[in-house]
Amino acid sequence: MFVFTLCLYFWCWLSSIHGLEFRYHNSMEMEQYLKDINRRFPDITLLHSIGQSVEGRELWVLILGQHPREHRTGIPEFKYVGNMHGNEAVGRVLLLQLIDYLTSSYLSDPLVTRLLNSSRVHILPSMNPDGFESSARECMNIKGRYNKNGVDLNRNFPDAFKSTTDREREKEVRAVMDWLKTENFVLSANLHGGAVVASYPYDNSNGGSELQGGLSISPDDDVFVHLAKTYSYSHSEMHNGNGCYDSQDFSHGITNGYQWYPLPGGMQDYNYVWAQCFELTLEISCCKYPPEAQLPGLWAANKPALLAYMQQVHLGVKGIVMDSYGKPVQNAVVEVSGRRNVCPFRTDRNGEYYRLLLPGNYTIKVMYPGHKTLTQTVQVPYGPDAFSALTHNFLLQNSDYSSTATQRSHSNNLITIFSNIYNTTVCATFLFELLMNV
Image (cartoon, rainbow, N blue to C red):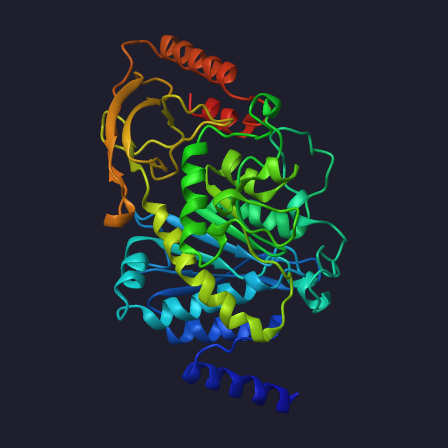
């Protein structure tokens, strides 16, 4: 045991001098590396676990940013998730390399410095460490894909378009769902293997896919296409659209998830529908578990795309919704005209909202019980170049109703309107929270 520990610390010492090796690190090695990074860069990193796997392995997340320990107003939250399928190991490697690059380049690389000063980045290198430990180093072997209970984690989330209430949520899935409740993530991507393409929502049918050319289109389809193209065109090869097999051909290197293949219970749709976080699925290698000699080339191909995608967290508009006293309002609905989501986008506990939008003019409606509906038009520039979305705050006014009973009636009418507009089954939690505020 002593010899093993000594070797582990020697490995950490070597990595601190020469950088992270291009190889597959087991769970213990990964944990030691993350702890070492946190020790070496305490001012810009925070390491914590969001839960445990079925076999008790920690689901480690490293937070990077100028203020890693807490959310700061106006600073968007971004995340990368890797190794959701244990046998798809490249994402795990690339996210560890990304951590190494971000920490070692901060203050010396202008792009990295501006990224970490303007956003808070969360990286979960391995969502399925149990599967990884049991996987086989083969391109197409599915051993290790599922978690210890034999469940595909990317089919285990609640689904907005198909009832999955009878499914027991796996520990890893519940950990991610709880994580999404604690952080107001704006943009995300999860890394997979077995193809080279950027896939965007919806993954499951929205009920009208037959009328949409076989696609399952979200209200923010233009933004998702832009995000997917940002990654594919920043990648050295993905934008060429050449699939890994003769039957695959992805125009611009992107695809609508449902058009590729229907996927109920996926993490991508769950992020978007319930957590108001835009997420892509990034397939980054034809081989799910390529030889280690190929890892430097895969990092070189994906590094510019990983950085460019992170910068897109600054698309659109952000701000604070306040009541007539200037106090931030939680759970105010912030609706962009023409973009009716399954669940409404709403303000967080700090009264903040973040809305990814392409440049243009948009009409935004803000609604909250007991207050007048506020509608304003904003002109949105291209925020990523400035590393900041447009800041636009909303100041609400109390409704004209004087009596408490009348205000309550007015509030209940608003809730009825929300119930008619949005999916009450899917959005039950939000509607309950809204009712509690009346």
